Length: 126
Image (cartoon, rainbow, N blue to C red; front, top):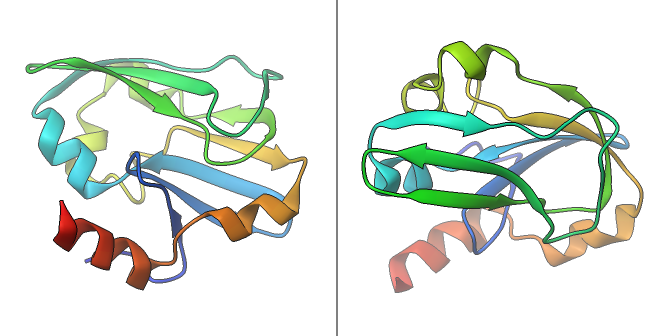
């Protein structure tokens, strides 16, 4: 079940927004499509990102995939637990499997993201 208070992208990233902070991860659809996740290249703290910049790289039993930042901002926290336990992205992508937190630099960009209902409708089309 999709968290209803998150925002989503067509590239299957999610953003949980609290004020000017966004916690970012990949959706259940993305982790399921990738298969068993074996490694993640995490972003560095203080990295400045524009929306759609490559945020991380996820490697799995099927492929390596780029993860894109849904919003512009600066990384200030990284889920280091994923370095030793990348399977958290498969097991709990919306909670323990988060990738990083950014301080949003352009809050107006949120309007470019999909709500849970919009993302669910998008998934039905693909």
